[in-house]
Amino acid sequence: MKKSITARMAGVLALAWMAIGAAACAPDAERAKPAAPVGEGAEAVIGLVEAFNDHDPDRMRGFWRDDVTWLEISGEGTSVITSSADQLYDELVLYFERFPSVRSSLENIAVNGAYVSAVERAVWEEDGERKSQSSFVVYEIADGKVKRFWYFPPQT
Image 1 (cartoon, one colour):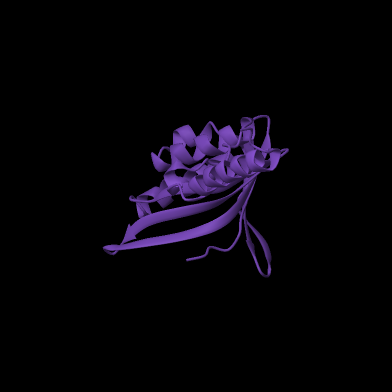
Image 2: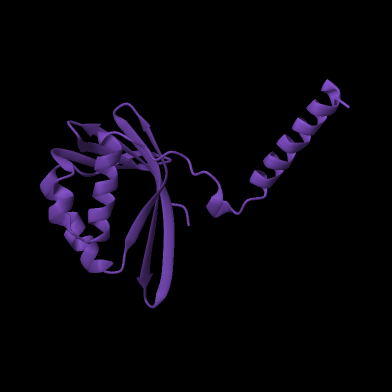
């Protein structure tokens, strides 16, 4: 006895729904992860953060231009923190001395032409207490290196 087309379709649909249900119930670690950002801009930013986590301002310097500018954005406007590679280097040396345990990670990295955006999460120990904050950051990339970066107000 031959199955009707309707019976076959019902069987196929039932199998499809079981497959979809199994995928939806898979543990998070087994679910597909979003594609990693690609391009020289993302590579420069990721390399910069890796060097930051090693507290290596000499290596970090290889990821930014001589005319690099660090800007911070607040509700009132934008402030220039450093406007050269030498100033940024000196700031980082002092920062690593003050926060010897600091580490950062990047979340939600996106590339749009010459710009790379991310949420940067910093974690450190201060007075025996674990601290953490995150900031939205946008990097402008020129010639494969960071030319400017803007930090938005940190969130705790």
